[in-house]
Image (cartoon, rainbow, N blue to C red; front, side):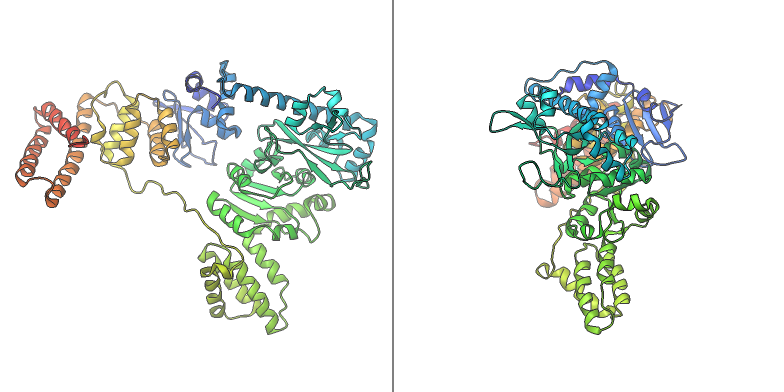
Length: 606
């Protein structure tokens, strides 16, 4: 990481979480906490709680939680380091790069600055360059006005060898590091794109990271007579990864979050057309197929994903992968039924309302694939219906859910006028025999959450440890907690770290349940003031539970022959006598004795 742990802690400490969150949602003081409507899900009654002292928030409705850094990451959709930098700038803190990362960081900033300059240069050339008139005419013919060109920062790469690199004085290192150009065999700097419309590509934070170029119609050959590709995109660079980037996400994310839907197109002009049709939640892949990293990005913004491809492209999507991504990332993939031979750009120009209707009427991915099979079915003969049934059940067998398969099998049987009892065994056979199916799917199970209620004494002890750490110092030990989740939380708190640091540590080590419980406890309002007697009562409850668990272990040791009967009985009798004293004036002595006994029992050589 380029930022030290000390500076991260400094940023957290310098950021008033209440002031930060009130930039996005109204908060009202309620006891020791601040409450308001959750910014992460729609609700009418406030369930969002903020602990100003610990710098934590928690929603009792959708169960999101975090600290200042987490909040900025979620609201602005940034990675961890970017969020820290945003808060550092906000607090006026100067961050220092470590020796190992400083050169890479400086180089990245240099590349980003050059790409930003290039995008502005291309854009100005499109708007004002005499040589860009054919490009402007083409855009107008596609319904793209000057205002739209400005909105998406469209540009024009002139038909010159080195116009960009010379105008901006870009070095070989920058040209190659950004993908904007290269040094040719003659040792001269040369632009990567010539005589092309430029579509700048931005990351989700709005930083220019790459460009895509499209030749104008009728200009399919370059001056040397070689046939050019219709589209040419920046290569992979230190600032640009195709498999992680979605064109248009920087403009679309607000509407995506508001609508809960993301529309995925194939091309840049499709995205622009969707925006012009009022669908300002469209994105596109950048010269690569929709993949795992794209879904990993999209799941952070919306659950409903609509593929707005032409019919053939949508039907050819890798079914096994789509189903896996649906289950793995908990998203729903739909397909918009566009007229045959139409893409969003063509449909939007011809009939914008038809595009809006197609998106609204999108169907689940499996239904789309089955409908294509059934629409092509020959229902006139028994042989035709049987052939289409074979294709349909192969499509069905690719889906991992037997319940979903069976629902759609009813539709297939009705459409093809075939007996359901005949079709069902065929699907089962294909599912069981991977060699008989076209594709197989490995589904990752959903992560299990905490099951059942946690012991109340342990929860009370953790609340006290969080909210009154000095008042209960040394009153609790790990051995008092019989629940593994609660013990893990107490262990983290006992290290002296802040709640946020403990939550981060738990999540890094896969202790998601413990991190979730701690996040909730940190903002949980205490319903009364605690006295020393109340603390002693909590200790007594913890002791009774932990001692009882240890006595059961002694009984098991006795049955296994690991402990002598007389030693076991003497120990049990002595411990029970001390337990009885917890409600007497001798309680402090009994507590100390039982505490020492539990520590001894937990020692490795006990």
